[in-house]
Image (cartoon, rainbow, N blue to C red; front, side, top):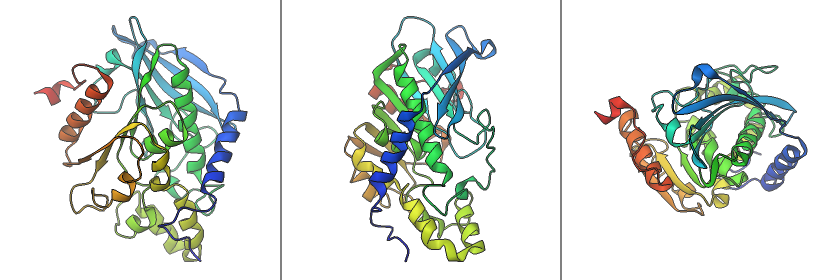
Length: 305
């Protein structure tokens, strides 16, 4: 029988403790190399290699403001895709003068794609028959390793570390201890099976494609995805959080996310997306500026006008 999606899997806590234990046994072994081409007069850029579970070598883009720290930090968790940038496309490069920024390339993504090069589409169902083999087990560990490393940097103000992205910031903040702020846009890992059944859009359509090809595997797929459902991580999140929902009527609108927001331990604000990168981006940057005491929000020139 399939695992009931409204119940936390019985092995959830033990599963994630095993990931944390495995990660603790593996030294991060950081290697840091400056990237002069990506430096500016207000920030220096570096490439960082770290070891995650597997063991597997991952990569991160680190930017440190020039001047006297410690500085607040922005930790950019990977979105679903092959390429990771120094800072997310469309955002202001000026944020690198305000904050330490760290963008992690998880296993399978470019710069961390040896020996495993992820397929897009395709990664979302890689190993999905079993929680132990699901690729996101390693990806979450990669995100935790990056957060651990960022928090260890002497240039970082440990009281002001923001984890930012889609689903992974919330999971990382729940399992790690360094993130004090979270900006999360639930996309793939909230009631995944139910939401996928209501769409034909990728990447969630990958789930539907997989089950059309392997209809006999629905129960194990459901069980695996239940181990990654944001609802079961929410009670562990004490960071102050901005949760970005879909507009009213969307599959992941504020009403749909109530089981998640109601379980959060830290102060949580829900913002309804206006499906505008500009409007949503301005709101998130202004929220972060207030929360982190940054003064003026770091907006790109085209947003200011």
